[in-house]
Length: 120
Length: 120
Image (cartoon, rainbow over all chains, first blue to last red; front, side, top):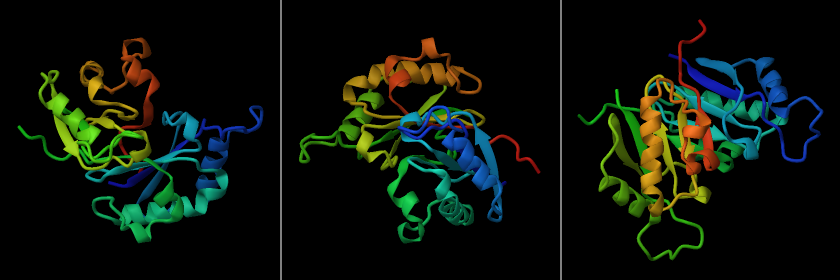
């Protein structure tokens, strides 16, 4: 199964013009018009509950760690796709630190372990 | 499959004594010694990458939204378990706002949609 790049389309950026198009929607547009890395599916989502840290994206895939990144903007699309390609290629989703783009090293909001087998 | 309550055991709390036991480990201890809700498995994890927002926990289950909560402490164990029980009972993990404990309403760091089917 593919890795999923979720993009919050309703994210604002703090102090952004409230009447302008949502920065999250602009980021989604920028990602939609780019060539996606192999094995990646882009999905817009209405809220990632990281509203004070927008724009935000999340990466998830079966059997892999999930990640949420924040404080992003439409201008970060290329770097997001670079980091997403590395995530998609990593069997467990754990990309070596040095191979992560700067925004993924510095702007992680959280990560969640893969579900794995239950203990009973 | 069970819902998983992940607890970061290495979380510090800002301004906490660096030589004292990690608040994350104390929170894990408090949760371990409590009765877990039906259908919930507790798992300690070494880092949820929410280090500036500790203590942190994450909820996940197959086919459900995942959630990460932060700014918690060992004293929040009972309320975490109340919210976890509601999560475990909700088929998609989406608990009505009014039924969430205050820490889950106010201290969400992020949420991630379920994987769902791919679009190709």
